[in-house]
Length: 225
Image 1 (cartoon, one colour):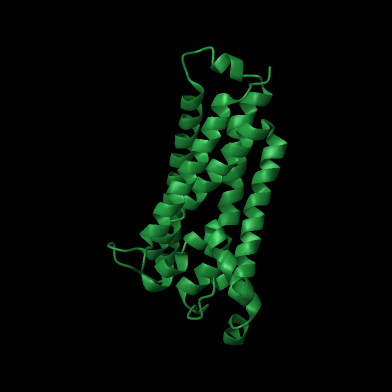
Image 2 (cartoon, one colour; image 1 turned 135 degrees about the vertical axis):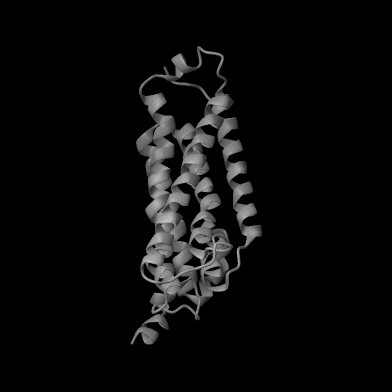
């Protein structure tokens, strides 16, 4: 019954197209029940947090006070980006530790040299850096929390839907590389023990490029009174 279900187009959305994924193994179960939803579970929260971290200073008229000090606009935004990035990394490491403890509690164990659950979770960091960068870009562009949060949520949900559709419909597979989820290949880590460093680097560079655009816009834009 499970094998028949996993062979359906609907279920392939949650297996990222992997035919060798089995729900009766801990890796397959976590891939479907945790990792396939990870960008929504964490991404939406980080997107909201990143937007509010900037737009609150606009909406509460703190910008003039902040920049009456020697702090530059670029430094202001960079410090927020770095703080959110480190917060995200800590969040992912703690999540990985909790997941590892849960796996050990049900009898599964892995050597200290390679913990696939920790690696899979932490390797999602650049994907969330992209979300943070996009959130800050929309925050400095709209200068309004409702507009920016709505934009971030739309970006996350649309790319998630496109990623799922690309796995569900074979004729749409060509759109997968246009989603950030495509470059977080957690199944390669969970099922093959392979960490794709190239994908990790690509998403990190993409996040830095988007953030650089947001710094340029913020540095040249007007600050409403």
